[in-house]
Length: 138
Image 1: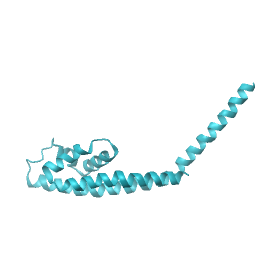
Image 2: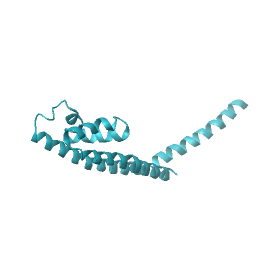
Image 3: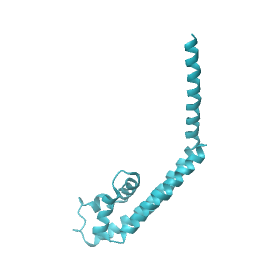
């Protein structure tokens, strides 16, 4: 009986810590929502730029961007561009794989835009989001 009582006391301590973790997560959900909105808007702006650039290339030269090419696969539609940019900053794809078609078929000037996007997203946005979540959880 004594061992059972000691186990119950130990479980209550873990439940209190679990409750604190759950409350911290629930408290930061509103912050998470606005962080996702901000990240999506930023990705959408850059995606519009790349999709427009690729569309102009494809309209000027139909044979240059085949449907199976990397340019059409990563940047052919706005949805593809959004997914490519999101995957590039979250590790879903290597950012160089999605940047190479831009460099080879669109313009060398698209490379600094893409690199600035990756650098700003990883070094600024993600670190600020982490700081905001830590602040909201405490």
